[in-house]
Image 1 (tube, rainbow, N blue to C red):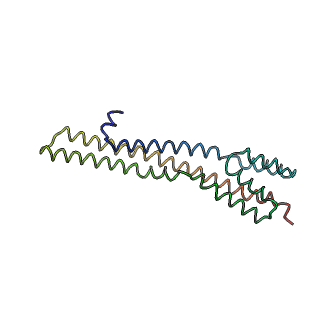
Image 2 (cartoon, rainbow, N blue to C red):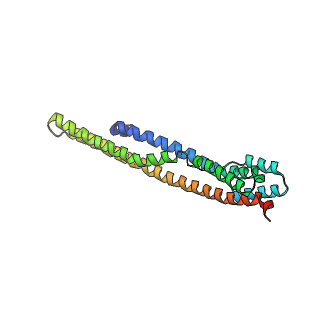
Image 3 (spheres, rainbow, N blue to C red):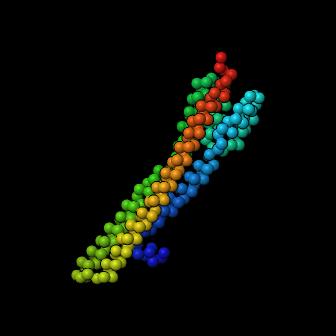
Length: 203
């Protein structure tokens, strides 16, 4: 590994920094999605049973004790239950507009790393060939050691850039799928909780 780092030159360190950032972002976002994902059907059934007993305080306590955006959407609906169906729907939509950006936070950074890692590898490749050219030009003849050193740096950087881009792109797609699933749960829960808290208003 130290030999590869020395061969890759300064660009390899940029690629390694990008890899470290991508790893931290992926782990943090994966944990956040894991905490945000709940069994929304079971949760809503529990809230419905509590509200049928007109125990609003307990329903809010359940929401506070449950992590994730679904619980916060449900809490917003419960807090606005006496203001009419339209206001409840608006409150849920406003809560959703707040929660979705939190789920998508820093995903663009991971996507950016997946896109620029190969470009960093290409930059290292070009620098390697420039070093070969400059060495040959200064010495006036083709030195095999200069050629192998420059070519080695070019290949190491190209491989490192691709090696970082592939898992970063896969990780981004994985997280996007998790976020989309949570958002779908939010939409279903929003529609359900509006019906639950406004049942008494129906004719």
